[in-house]
Amino acid sequence: MLKRLTVLWTVVRGDARQLWFALRHPAAPSWLKWGTALIVLYLLSPIDLIPDALPVIGVVDDLVLVPLAIRWLLRRLPPEIAQASAARRRAG
Image (tube, rainbow, N blue to C red; front, side, top):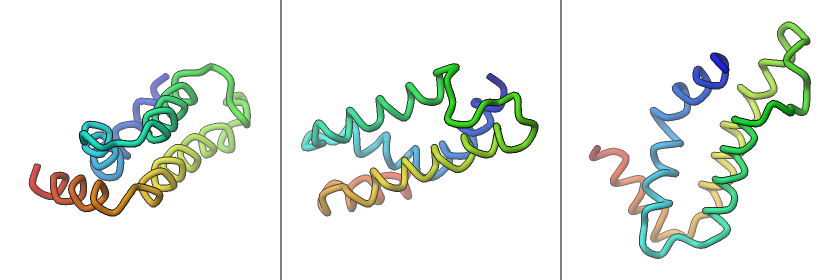
């Protein structure tokens, strides 16, 4: 659980904050909400692609997959939502 909080902390300062603003945008598409829910479920789920019992590789999969998934969602945002959430991220 500690490693998941560390991943969350690392991402919150950047892309996750922009994703949060995009989710709260009135024109946010439903696929964005579903994608974000799946990322959160993956973080909280005890089931991983690579088990955490493997010393380094088990942690690295979360450290790589979660930020990549967030970036993937952000790149697919409609331009007006992406610009509004990026501006709000910089302002706040």
